[in-house]
Image (cartoon, rainbow, N blue to C red; front, side, top):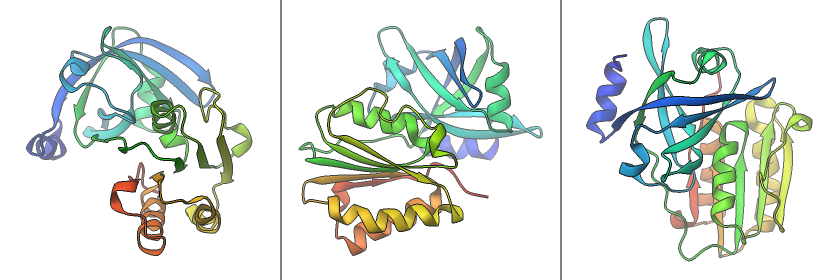
Length: 239
């Protein structure tokens, strides 16, 4: 598949292309599939870091369409990793439903860089949603002894499981229902986060683009958190 102008732009920005091969496809729930891939040599070239993600290429109405997915349990020795696909209607969900061992998909690595804070923070303050669940777990697992509070937004909080993926002490999850296009999450975090902030905290935000920008501006401008103690990235655009 040709990647069109998006692919050309990513190449100019230093993107590197790989081809992944499906190893297995597991139905985790009616809403989620977990696929295992062979990496096509990627991990040996790029290495691995917490919250690492790649852009997968799908076809939509005859045109290339790319979406970002976080690597789950990447293993450079075997050249394998998992990815989780929420089964929305659309090219990515449709592809994940039908993918079989031996199927391939193109991927581009660009924009994924993340450097864990040094020195490690005294506390992690995390804001995310189902789209960033794998990245949240990756972040938490990279700092297993660091206390954390996670505000996790979801349309149906009662259905959510797996945050954190592995049990650990001092990990508190606040489930926040998605209301008013993310405005309820903004109000909740603005009200609660300042009470958990300390000079050695690290704030990590990854939800829809508008909400992420709003909360990042609040943390940076109103709470005075310096850039090296804040990471914010919009994972999807609300329509």
